Image (tube, rainbow, N blue to C red):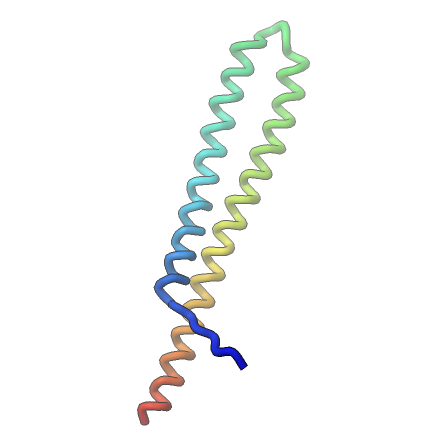
Length: 100
């Protein structure tokens, strides 16, 4: 049987990175939507209203997908935090049993 080695600090760093990715992804998605929507309106104006309307639907779908990616990163961070708390608690309890 192969031993399993967990480095809590590395797991904690992974969780913090996932949380940061979730926050950054959501922020960049919102900024991108605002900037691109303003550019499309300025470029196409009244002449391209049909295109702008179709693009708005595509952009909304894109923003929803970006939100899902951000939520996945946030959920990963939450799972890592909970798992790490459980692991360190169990590890500490087992270590105290060995010391006694």
